[in-house]
Image (spheres, rainbow, N blue to C red):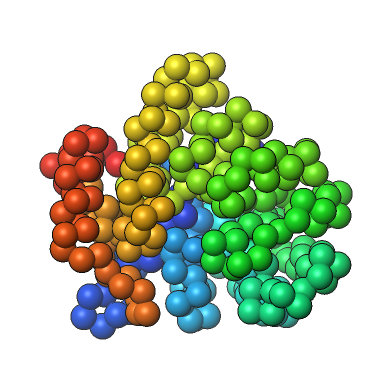
Length: 303
């Protein structure tokens, strides 16, 4: 039986063949196996860190299916299913379910964001939740959508039987606390690796952390120490995780995460245009930091 929705979930990157630019299933599966072996409670496929907006719908379907082949039934497979129309979002939820996802992560529509009222967004998410074959998690990622989900939207959906939780990547712990209060029965996930410990103190069910692609063992250890009541150990893990998150994720985004994965012995590879890979100097700086943290290809098992 699948455990409760909690713990560390890794929003896995999408590797591409360096020659053709196509999604590369072999390194994708290999990375997922390594992250699960490191103790991750699940995988989030085709999310922001997975370059979701740059994937075709056929690629999306295949990626979710490939991840289901690797993620065992007692771990969570969540698929990013946010699209610009309510109709397309529902279709993405159906595709995710057909390919074996356990739940979907749904960002708000962004293009017409300034024209969308709270009532319109609430209706969008309600219709998605009504028609999705699998459980729905709301996703607040204002860095990319330029639209912040109000806690009123969460409160309006708090009793919906098909909404399981939310991920807050605002980086604002006050916002996270407001989300928790608006829907106290939901599984609330933090999206910032720099605030994982603090979010757990505030009642987070876990984290969906891009930094876990390069430091899964540290992030898993933080969560396990916290659950065991070892606040000192959890705090020490957070002190290791924060600079890694700032250097790879906050400063460089997906390109930084992929470069760091290459350095620690996984397969990050190139990003897809129009994103740009790290310059040599940036990669060298990241390599020095990861080596100093005990994470490098010489110790590839310690991800």
